[in-house]
Amino acid sequence: MGATQWRHFIPYQPDIEAALKQLRNEVFERGDYSYGGLDTLAATIERLDPEAGRKYRERLALLSPNITKSRRPKSIESLLKKYGDTGAHSVLDIDHICAAPEYGGLSPVPEDCVVEIFGTPYPSRDLLSPDNGGGLRLYDCNLYGRWSAVYLVLFTGETPTEYYIEGCSGD
Image (tube, rainbow, N blue to C red; front, side, top):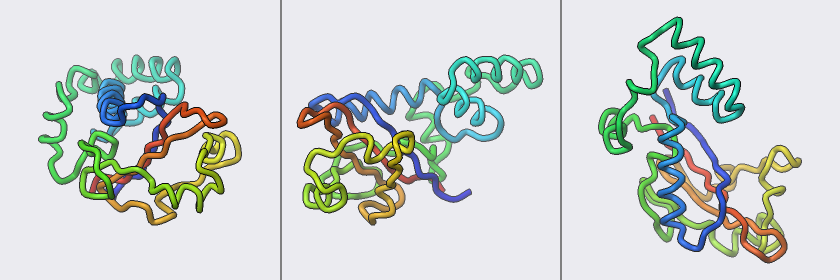
């Protein structure tokens, strides 16, 4: 199947470990990970447009009653155990905070790289968001590799407002 790149913008909180845990739980609850087939497509549609996703899942349930949320794993741990070395192709494959990129870890973008890449120690969302003309992927800057992720604090002025988390996992 190959690896999958993924990214998330999440509200800032001072504890990055708590933010990662919350994000992983939200991604799991949404079903925003690879578990194959049409159900993966439904989860993607729901993330982009919740109402369209709900309608798509209703139609899908009529056509194939076996594809329901009740058939998904009951916990992140059981999901990761089920898929083993293949992974979930999502932030669910990232389970700890670390100082530098490592397998299964989320590390900060080094401060000197932040200034070099963005020209400021206070990058804002518009520098990364494709909706606002950005769209830079940190993977292209060689800041991390497969089965790892990096995070960046984004600012409004000099006030931290959210995290940008980007990673690559799955096989």
